[in-house]
Amino acid sequence: MLAKENGVEQFRWIGRPTRGTEDGPDLIVYGGFERNNVPYHAGDFFLSPWPPMLGPERFAGKQCVARILCCFQRLVDNKCFVNVEWFVMPDVVAKTSDAESVEGEVYPTMTFADVNVAQVGERCRVVHATEVWSVTAWAQKPEHYWWRRWYDVHSRSVSEVKIRGSANTSLAVNFAQRRTSAEIF
Image (cartoon, rainbow, N blue to C red; front, side, top):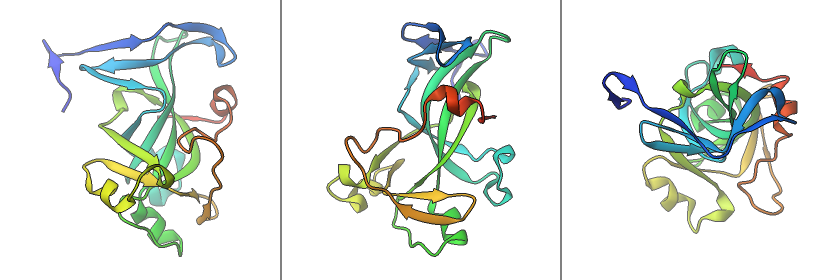
């Protein structure tokens, strides 16, 4: 439940605004936002249902994890969004792939969308398996997840990822390229 003051949700941007960058001249990009005294920044994760318009139908409404890649405001209508990368939970993968899942494992999908900040859910933590001593112990903590493999939503297959550098760095293309094909949620 969102905390409200006098029935109004509290919201403010965090960080210095950047306008007219490679991300698009119609946007103001920020480092993060605060909603009801909870800060969210690029790189943070949150829980949310999979947006039905992204398809496939078998994912619609399933609980997923999203990683915030960018926070922005559209100048044309002043609406506030985050661009996210979606991760699916093991129950989705188990129904569509032969891969065995371990408790707390989530799968990045290389599926991106612009999500209205009002739809951003409860924060959670996600790390690559190489960043924790024990994935089992990590997953025992509330809202803690880990990843080691990618899930392709179209071929319904799981593949290993070789990590160079920081495992939690987004391996995606830049925001401007993603926005051209991203859906609005």
